[in-house]
Length: 194
Image (cartoon, rainbow, N blue to C red; front, side, top):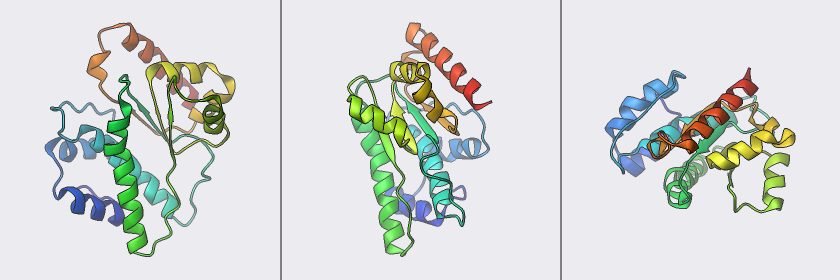
Protein backbone atom coordinates (compact mmCIF):
# COMPACT_ATOMS: atom_id res chain seq x y z
CA UNK A 1 0.00 0.00 0.00
CA UNK A 2 1.21 3.51 -0.82
CA UNK A 3 2.88 5.37 2.06
CA UNK A 4 -0.02 6.76 4.05
CA UNK A 5 0.36 8.36 7.45
CA UNK A 6 0.40 5.54 10.06
CA UNK A 7 -2.97 6.67 11.51
CA UNK A 8 -4.61 6.53 8.09
CA UNK A 9 -2.96 3.25 7.18
CA UNK A 10 -3.91 1.65 10.49
CA UNK A 11 -7.56 2.70 10.11
CA UNK A 12 -7.71 1.49 6.50
CA UNK A 13 -6.15 -1.90 7.28
CA UNK A 14 -8.52 -2.43 10.20
CA UNK A 15 -11.54 -1.42 8.12
CA UNK A 16 -10.69 -3.04 4.78
CA UNK A 17 -7.52 -5.11 4.99
CA UNK A 18 -6.23 -4.70 1.46
CA UNK A 19 -6.94 -1.95 -1.08
CA UNK A 20 -9.23 -2.74 -3.99
CA UNK A 21 -7.70 -2.66 -7.50
CA UNK A 22 -9.04 0.89 -8.22
CA UNK A 23 -7.47 2.08 -4.97
CA UNK A 24 -4.13 0.33 -5.47
CA UNK A 25 -3.90 1.62 -9.05
CA UNK A 26 -5.33 5.08 -8.40
CA UNK A 27 -3.37 6.15 -5.32
CA UNK A 28 0.09 6.44 -6.95
CA UNK A 29 -1.33 8.71 -9.66
CA UNK A 30 -3.29 10.84 -7.18
CA UNK A 31 -0.26 11.06 -4.87
CA UNK A 32 1.86 12.26 -7.79
CA UNK A 33 -0.55 15.13 -8.38
CA UNK A 34 -1.74 13.83 -11.73
CA UNK A 35 -5.23 14.21 -13.12
CA UNK A 36 -6.64 10.75 -12.47
CA UNK A 37 -9.70 9.05 -13.91
CA UNK A 38 -10.80 5.91 -12.06
CA UNK A 39 -13.27 3.72 -13.93
CA UNK A 40 -14.56 0.70 -12.06
CA UNK A 41 -17.86 -0.95 -11.06
CA UNK A 42 -20.08 0.53 -8.36
CA UNK A 43 -18.93 -0.49 -4.88
CA UNK A 44 -15.29 -1.01 -5.85
CA UNK A 45 -13.95 1.84 -3.71
CA UNK A 46 -13.43 4.57 -6.32
CA UNK A 47 -14.74 7.43 -4.20
CA UNK A 48 -12.82 6.29 -1.13
CA UNK A 49 -9.70 6.04 -3.32
CA UNK A 50 -10.06 9.73 -4.13
CA UNK A 51 -11.00 10.87 -0.64
CA UNK A 52 -8.46 8.84 1.35
CA UNK A 53 -5.34 10.33 -0.22
CA UNK A 54 -6.77 13.83 0.30
CA UNK A 55 -7.63 13.02 3.91
CA UNK A 56 -4.13 11.62 4.35
CA UNK A 57 -2.58 14.91 3.19
CA UNK A 58 -4.78 16.85 5.61
CA UNK A 59 -3.81 14.52 8.50
CA UNK A 60 -0.12 14.92 7.71
CA UNK A 61 -0.47 18.68 7.57
CA UNK A 62 -2.50 19.00 10.76
CA UNK A 63 0.01 16.88 12.65
CA UNK A 64 3.05 18.68 11.25
CA UNK A 65 5.14 21.04 13.34
CA UNK A 66 3.73 24.05 11.51
CA UNK A 67 0.15 23.32 10.46
CA UNK A 68 -1.61 25.67 8.05
CA UNK A 69 -4.27 28.02 9.32
CA UNK A 70 -7.57 26.14 9.41
CA UNK A 71 -9.59 29.02 7.99
CA UNK A 72 -7.46 29.79 4.96
CA UNK A 73 -9.83 28.12 2.52
CA UNK A 74 -11.13 24.90 1.07
CA UNK A 75 -8.43 22.31 0.36
CA UNK A 76 -10.53 19.45 -1.06
CA UNK A 77 -13.52 20.07 -3.31
CA UNK A 78 -15.88 17.14 -3.95
CA UNK A 79 -18.45 17.64 -6.70
CA UNK A 80 -21.26 15.21 -7.37
CA UNK A 81 -24.13 15.69 -9.81
CA UNK A 82 -26.34 13.36 -7.79
CA UNK A 83 -28.86 14.58 -5.26
CA UNK A 84 -28.36 11.48 -3.10
CA UNK A 85 -25.04 12.64 -1.66
CA UNK A 86 -25.66 11.61 1.94
CA UNK A 87 -24.89 7.89 1.59
CA UNK A 88 -21.67 8.48 -0.34
CA UNK A 89 -20.53 11.17 2.07
CA UNK A 90 -21.27 8.99 5.09
CA UNK A 91 -19.48 5.93 3.70
CA UNK A 92 -16.52 7.65 2.05
CA UNK A 93 -15.90 10.69 4.24
CA UNK A 94 -17.66 10.60 7.64
CA UNK A 95 -16.66 7.01 8.49
CA UNK A 96 -12.98 7.44 7.49
CA UNK A 97 -12.69 10.77 9.33
CA UNK A 98 -14.25 9.33 12.48
CA UNK A 99 -12.10 6.20 12.24
CA UNK A 100 -8.89 8.19 11.83
CA UNK A 101 -9.86 10.45 14.75
CA UNK A 102 -10.35 7.29 16.87
CA UNK A 103 -6.92 6.03 15.78
CA UNK A 104 -5.38 9.36 16.82
CA UNK A 105 -7.07 9.15 20.24
CA UNK A 106 -5.87 5.56 20.70
CA UNK A 107 -2.31 6.68 19.93
CA UNK A 108 -2.60 9.82 22.09
CA UNK A 109 -1.97 12.10 19.10
CA UNK A 110 -3.70 15.51 19.18
CA UNK A 111 -5.21 15.54 15.68
CA UNK A 112 -6.95 18.86 14.97
CA UNK A 113 -10.40 18.33 13.48
CA UNK A 114 -10.68 17.99 9.72
CA UNK A 115 -13.77 19.99 8.92
CA UNK A 116 -16.19 19.16 6.10
CA UNK A 117 -19.29 21.00 4.92
CA UNK A 118 -22.07 20.39 2.42
CA UNK A 119 -23.27 23.15 0.08
CA UNK A 120 -26.28 22.36 -2.11
CA UNK A 121 -29.45 24.16 -3.12
CA UNK A 122 -30.97 23.05 0.22
CA UNK A 123 -28.24 24.65 2.33
CA UNK A 124 -29.63 27.42 4.53
CA UNK A 125 -28.42 31.02 4.25
CA UNK A 126 -26.89 30.76 7.71
CA UNK A 127 -24.90 27.65 6.73
CA UNK A 128 -23.81 29.31 3.47
CA UNK A 129 -22.49 32.31 5.36
CA UNK A 130 -20.67 30.02 7.80
CA UNK A 131 -18.93 28.21 4.90
CA UNK A 132 -17.64 31.52 3.56
CA UNK A 133 -16.71 32.93 6.98
CA UNK A 134 -14.94 29.74 8.17
CA UNK A 135 -14.17 27.57 5.13
CA UNK A 136 -14.06 23.83 5.77
CA UNK A 137 -11.08 21.70 4.80
CA UNK A 138 -13.39 19.66 2.57
CA UNK A 139 -16.38 21.09 0.71
CA UNK A 140 -19.00 18.79 -0.82
CA UNK A 141 -21.18 20.38 -3.47
CA UNK A 142 -23.07 20.00 -6.73
CA UNK A 143 -22.12 21.50 -10.12
CA UNK A 144 -24.88 24.11 -9.79
CA UNK A 145 -23.89 25.19 -6.29
CA UNK A 146 -20.24 25.38 -7.32
CA UNK A 147 -21.24 27.71 -10.17
CA UNK A 148 -23.18 29.95 -7.79
CA UNK A 149 -20.29 30.12 -5.35
CA UNK A 150 -17.82 30.97 -8.13
CA UNK A 151 -20.02 33.88 -9.21
CA UNK A 152 -19.99 35.36 -5.69
CA UNK A 153 -16.91 37.47 -4.96
CA UNK A 154 -16.88 36.52 -1.27
CA UNK A 155 -17.55 32.82 -1.79
CA UNK A 156 -15.14 32.56 -4.72
CA UNK A 157 -12.23 33.57 -2.46
CA UNK A 158 -12.46 30.35 -0.41
CA UNK A 159 -11.48 28.32 -3.49
CA UNK A 160 -8.04 29.89 -3.95
CA UNK A 161 -6.53 27.21 -1.72
CA UNK A 162 -8.07 24.14 -3.40
CA UNK A 163 -5.49 21.42 -3.96
CA UNK A 164 -7.72 18.49 -4.88
CA UNK A 165 -10.93 18.35 -6.91
CA UNK A 166 -12.92 15.12 -6.94
CA UNK A 167 -15.64 14.89 -9.57
CA UNK A 168 -17.83 11.87 -8.83
CA UNK A 169 -20.30 10.21 -11.19
CA UNK A 170 -18.85 12.14 -14.11
CA UNK A 171 -20.35 9.67 -16.58
CA UNK A 172 -23.84 10.92 -15.70
CA UNK A 173 -23.10 14.43 -17.00
CA UNK A 174 -20.26 13.97 -19.48
CA UNK A 175 -22.55 14.13 -22.52
CA UNK A 176 -25.06 16.82 -21.56
CA UNK A 177 -25.42 20.51 -20.73
CA UNK A 178 -24.69 19.96 -17.04
CA UNK A 179 -21.31 18.53 -18.01
CA UNK A 180 -20.49 21.48 -20.23
CA UNK A 181 -21.56 23.84 -17.45
CA UNK A 182 -19.36 21.99 -14.94
CA UNK A 183 -16.42 22.11 -17.36
CA UNK A 184 -16.69 25.89 -17.45
CA UNK A 185 -16.86 26.08 -13.66
CA UNK A 186 -13.75 23.89 -13.37
CA UNK A 187 -11.92 26.21 -15.79
CA UNK A 188 -12.95 29.19 -13.66
CA UNK A 189 -11.73 27.35 -10.56
CA UNK A 190 -8.38 26.62 -12.17
CA UNK A 191 -8.00 30.26 -13.19
CA UNK A 192 -8.44 31.28 -9.52
CA UNK A 193 -5.48 29.20 -8.45
CA UNK A 194 -3.05 30.75 -10.94
